[in-house]
Length: 233
Length: 81
Image (cartoon, rainbow over all chains, first blue to last red; front, side):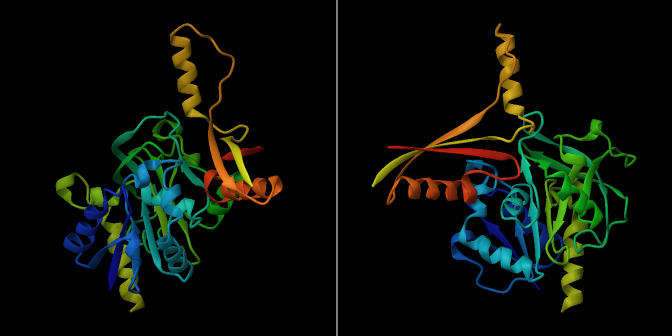
């Protein structure tokens, strides 16, 4: 089993993700510079957070048009696991792996804080270790994280169980008051791919993977992926 | 032939424009009341194409594939001589 974390110019959460996958979760994980391409068949590809290409044009837009993303999209279309975190989620959406876009926060400021998320479904490789409706604590750190999609797309996401996480309060209530960035229907994690094998999420699970950080809830995202890969092998 | 194209990318009607709202607020703070304000980005692109129509088509492809995101954006292309 092997993970790849793709590094773009401006990625800055790449090593954190690799550390969590390898040191905390015990799986092999390569860092892959985008120009080098994916030379192995990886079981899972992670697009890490950061500011690829300085967020020029739109967050994630330029990274999404690099050659390595053709390989990542093909991997996803073939059912391979892809996790996009923060800037990685923006890259994933810009690549069309999930519908919609993560754009400027309703209040155009950078928000960095722990938030509560409600797990909306637990049948994807990323969310299988959570309980449905469980409230988890994972931090966000972004200026362009407001999820926007057409009403038709959001209806389809709801109908197909493709919404992984919504911003909520500590009791799990999803209200506008606890929506930090103005995301449509408080959505902050969207599943894509033929088998819900792609997750684009704004919160940073790698920053909540050890108790010493205040929460280990995010670790379950990576452990769920590992369990799914083990079952395939 | 050499052409210069001016591309304007703005938000679709009805899309929230947080930057515009912040700018409008800042203008009000220094005494300028406005009835509306929207933002857009302008790109000036120099390119070589067979004719004006071909230049227009090329720049529209640039908008479709990178410069605009159809979920939230509209765009206008003006090919200058």
